[in-house]
Length: 379
Image (cartoon, rainbow, N blue to C red; front, top):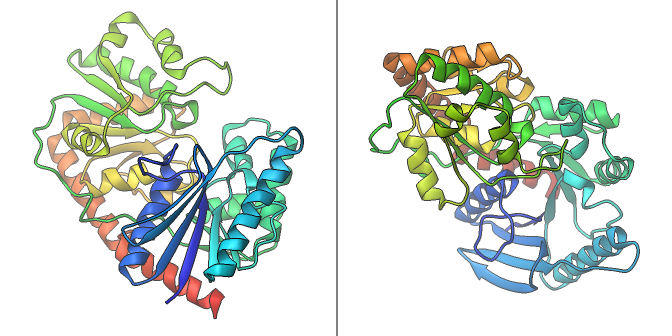
């Protein structure tokens, strides 16, 4: 029985201090691997406690965050390395996977094959957003990628863009994120008329500033329209201020009254909000292969999304929804109005979206691709 491990700082679990898209994708894969009689261990670092426990066939290693007087970035990596290698000595691990973000495996010497999966480095997102990256972050990420035994990517766009940024010579294999189409499916929830929903972190790179500006234009044509933003607030990368506060300052008071922010919700409630929405709008500037898009598509929702790079590997314009340049406020507002005005279009796009997920991104198919990949590197 193959034993695979994942190194991560996030995972959707009550005892884990953080969960986001990468954590969700790891959970989806880990759960599917266990269902295929694979052994899975999670090494979750930067936590509030040290703990080891098993749940649903997955072994959790929570590794507490540590502070050091100097060289903390190096010493904590060595602490993680030693913990993983010690665990491996007692219970052999066939391969371990880590994300590319911040190059956590830089300077580690692990005693099992290391796979890095590209979900988007800091360098990748800085490049897409036109920001300058800290030199030490670039160094960590490049060192981690160069020293990895194998590299996976969640999209062809992310693979090629990362190769170009770091001038990598290694082969990169693309295996898309997958989703459980039984867990995410259409819900029998009454539609909330003339409503738009965005879900995900409230952050600049997700296109939230353009979204509220486009919604303001929609509101001038359809005064009964509403917009619900679901997700945690974040500090804005440019100003250091809270993003929700900045959003309110960027629009008129009348527009603010039509926008609701819901920060903390159980995910089952988020799914109900998505199901009730007339249109889901996700106009991100920077992604690798977003779980939120997969989830909304699997739930048979008509989407308005951005049209950048990765988007073209998942969405199909005028078939699974509308794809626009997120910086083009007029085009974004136009696409939102187009779907708001046509129940027939929404129904057709939603059905096409779910069928695309079932055909190309269902967990059953994606997990088999992952198993085949890991068997090839272990053998």
